[in-house]
Amino acid sequence: MFSSAKLFASVAAGTLAMVAVAVAAPATSAQPQGYYSIGMTPDAAQIAQWSIAIKPDGSNLPAGSGTVDAGATVYGAECAMCHGTFGEGVDAYPKLVGGVGALKTQKLKTVGSYWPYAPIVYDYINRAMPFFAPRSLTNDQVYAITAYILNLNGIVPDNFVADAKSLAAVKMPNRDGFNFKDPRPLTHDVACMAHCADPKALTVTSDASKSGITPRTTGPVDTMQGSPAK
Image 1 (cartoon, rainbow, N blue to C red):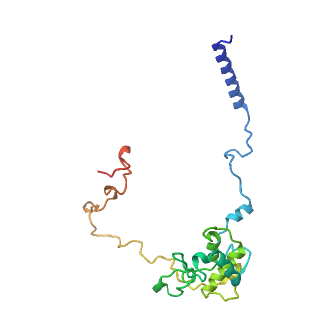
Image 2: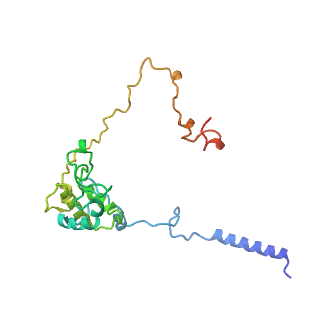
């Protein structure tokens, strides 16, 4: 009968042998050292599918084209249910038409009144619309819808054909309506250089941690969260 001592010795010897083999075995991973052997390096075609952002000047607009008439058809099938047949908006869905030249009074932000560049109209439709199936439209369909919406706003004529070149050339009504330089001063007051207030005389009049809104983030760990400072 095999004794427990002999069994233990046999198992121990086998374990040591396996450890020795594992230590001596060379690495066989196909990935370079330092990687976790997951994922892959994307090729140019894969990157192109992700790199769809369009710049205001039309850079990166894809091949394709669309007419106003074709856009009316696609818009009717994919967009009118929310935005209305003529861009007037249905219920609480955004209006796409109106308010041109009257932002200071109407405050109606539409493609015609607010958007500064035509290529980014294409960009938004291409990546986000229709709401229920984004990225489902072809390049030609997106160009056509863009042409139709611009035409509804009176920005392009009925025979307009939208493509990479023509969209970049469109001058939107609100092209120059954005102020990219904040006119507000960096500070509310001029820095005090003489006869300034004594820092010791200054008091904190509002403390979020004592109002029960913000948990403590300093002090003993057991009292940091869930209870305001005493």
